Length: 212
Ligand SMILES: Cc1cc2nc3c(=O)[nH]c(=O)nc-3n(C[C@H](O)[C@H](O)[C@H](O)COP(=O)(O)OP(=O)(O)OC[C@H]3O[C@@H](n4cnc5c(N)ncnc54)[C@H](O)[C@@H]3O)c2cc1C
Image (cartoon, rainbow, N blue to C red; front, top):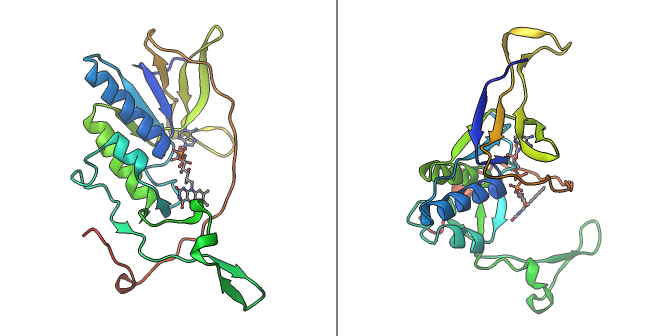
């Protein structure tokens, strides 16, 4: 089957914070070195941030390394942690507040922020695009393309396929996003993790931004 293809030097799979930060950093380094580097980010969600479970306590050190002027650029990181407590649940209704002295450093969040990770991803995607990165929402990487034993790119999933595998009138074959001869890397081992998060809608009056 003939497929449309796009040549890129780097294909990043997934427009989460890691993928977008990678794309931004590569584009920054290429720009600083005066080199042309075609970086693309494919995201299976219809929009960047659509598949990101919203809400995170955010430690801004890495963001400050990537964009020292993140505040001036309007990053959606505005609500700082102003109060926190760690409580030991002693029974169905009982709890004891753990004295701050005993709270491990990793559980102390003063200086951190409460953010929407989806909003941060949208903002990072905008920064990436301003650096010349192709951000491609709506494209899921479905397979790895090889050139011999070397990774040559990714194949995006076909669109318009019915449950029984037949092609709908809207069928569109996936794209080949291939390296342009300059870069290649073996695929790293994939590790999986799991978790759950409760997203709670709050009345506007009960929320506040500390940085305006
Ligand atoms: C329940 C829970 C709570 C958390 N709370 C916090 C917190 O409070 N503070 C904190 O700092 N961290 C928190 N984390 C961790 C944080 O969410 C992750 O570290 C972070 O999201 C990882 O970023 P990532 O870019 O690697 O992956 P992800 O955020 O998972 O992003 C991956 C992206 O890739 C896309 N994608 C996946 N497969 C494909 C494909 N085949 N083709 C195209 N696109 C694809 C997805 O749609 C998604 O947009 C939490 C994690 C969980 C699970």
